[in-house]
Length: 319
Image (cartoon, rainbow, N blue to C red; front, side, top):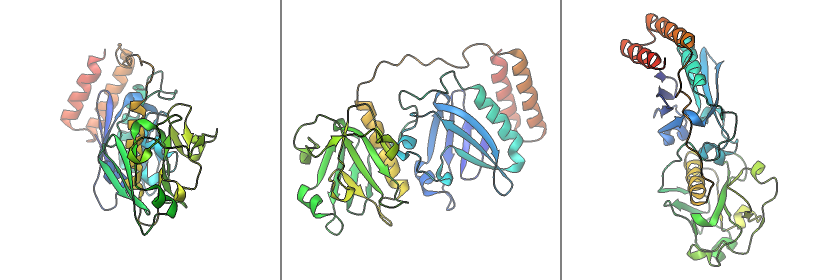
């Protein structure tokens, strides 16, 4: 186990459990996530680098497509809100290096390839948040937008409150409220029924997705898809953000949950059973080196007696 600033990482045989602190200094996004279990199969690489003010930073890099939260964020998260980043005091560098090596040894042959499905669980519905022009809610099957008379445009009032089935959607577009013109927009599929006020059609307001769609921050599953290119303030499939409306810690988990549900409702080719990276026997010399390193950590007081015994037994079992 590694206890750092804002989070604690617990290392299991096939995954890392990340528990985020609830302190006032912890970013609100991390507080809202509470905890996340990251399978080793979802990881691409592991880094350990010097941090600021006598700290070191342990970071695991997920495979593209493995985490719905990062897919929805589309590179817009600030460094301090990165859920895969653990900041530690510099005097724990030796222990962090040990766990970094352990994680690297668990990376499989597919770690350099994009994941063909989500491997990290999304936040769970029901969820809701208050946008500038309406309230967004998601119950796991439907997304609803209820307009505010103080913020919604006349186009949205004319369209009326909206309800969309997950099965109608190809993805979502989340533009961070920390920038200009932030919004959450639903991206409809190509062919849908006709009345989206009752959860049916997303209508005939849509045009084909442009090649640069995903680069613009739209998380889309499969093709073809369609997207409304009207401005977000005129689009009944979008809600606007603003100062105090749709903050990252509320709207991004919402977007990730919708995206994960969209992906799970769409057909996908059968995925072969994952191959356990550590299923075979490991090099005895490598095991001996790791036990020696573990012993050094134990003697330095960085690993408890119980942790030393348990990890040593696990390593010996791999011979």
